[in-house]
Amino acid sequence: MTRPQDPVDASARSPFAGCAILIAALLVMVFLIVFSTVTLFRQSSEIVKFTAAQPVPVAVSSLDHQEAALNGLAERLEAFRQQLSGDGPARLALTPDEMNLVIAAYEPFRDFRGTLRVIGVEGDTLRLAIAFPLNGKPRRAHPDERGWIASDLRYLNGVLIARPVLSQHELVLQIDALEVPGAQVPREFIEQMSPYRVSERYLTNLALGPAMARLTRVGIADGQWVLTRVPGETPADVIGKPQVDSASQRFFTILGIVACVFLLCAGVVVFLALRAKAARP
Image (cartoon, rainbow, N blue to C red):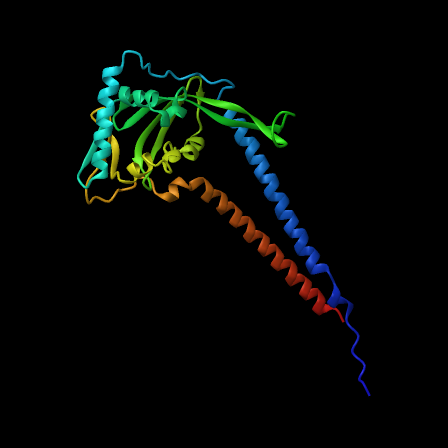
């Protein structure tokens, strides 16, 4: 005779634990969305204080009557390229005027025209006049814009004071200060913007990418920007990868803390559910 099975306790099928975990997950998701949105709007409100709605165009060096200077510069750049392709030492020193001439004359640097200009050298830093576009406060997209969220551009017009250094075979600018007329730029914004990866776009360039990879030193000497390759020398990256990715690291740190809080809450909920189930007759 078949023995009758014991009745299944209703509490065994209780969805309390699963629902509690789902609710906790939804709360964490809502918290992350609200936190990200509030942070974005607060950041946008702070950016408005030291940016402008319109750019202040930066002067571009004229190429008129510059044939002699351009020919001499072209010869030096070609000689430097050949030095880098060999096994011996290589060195190129450029004055501020020559750097501006490179921006004005060579096509790979056209994106800097009207947005960046070297206006001087102080000690081991460059002074750069800038008019950088930044994303403004998010808004609903207009009918002629893509997507459903857009923003109006803001422009960072002022003077950037930075030290050129090498980082992972890439030329970057370690920003010391940002001078904006009539406004003060928060230190947090400068730290988030620094290092400014001014040459990131050239990493895949067939000519400039390999040339940067062969450099061992970059710096300022005698009022000039000096690019150097010393045979057998290992580049000493002043800025390491952790600093380049510091902003993303802070984000993942916050995300990790939230995830730990979620797991803790979920564990407490499951523990209480199991205790409640065991206490039932």
